[in-house]
Length: 149
Picture 1 (cartoon, rainbow, N blue to C red):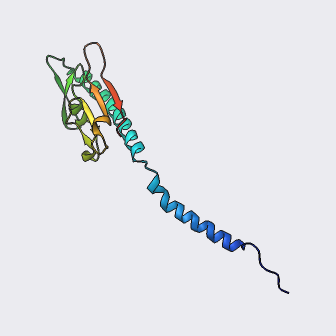
Picture 2: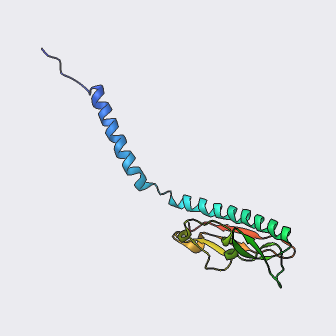
Picture 3: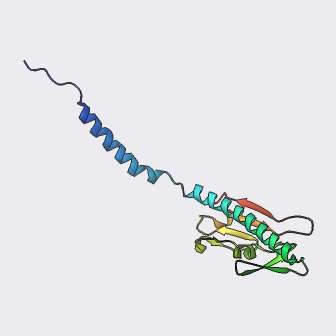
C-alpha cells in the first residue's frame, strides 16, 4: 500500500515564499509615502545652503568694503549676480536665492517676501524657510517650517 503524502515539498514552499516576496515588493511603495520626508529634507538643505551662501556674500562684502546699511544698501557680485547687501549680508531671501543653485527652479518659490518655499509641497506656505535679514546688532536668521511638507 502506498503512503499518502502529507504537507508540502521544499520546492513548493520556496515558490510560495518567492511569490509573496514579489507581491510585497510591488505593493509596498503604494503604502509607504516618503515624499513628505524628502521635502522636509530639501527644506533643511535649503536653509543650510542659505547660511553658506550668506557667509560667502558676507566675506566678499567685507573684503570689498561694500557691506551697506539699511538706509544705504551695498552690493556684492557673487557668481555673476549682483546681490544687494545690508550689514554685509543679503538684504532679502530673493537676493540670497540669486547666489544659490535652487535646482530645479520650478520646485521653489521666492514670491513671498522673506521666504523660500517648496512649491511642490501640499501646503507651500507651511514648507518653507523664513529669512530675517541682518540688523546693525544681529546676524540674519533662518527659520524652518516643515509642517506642510
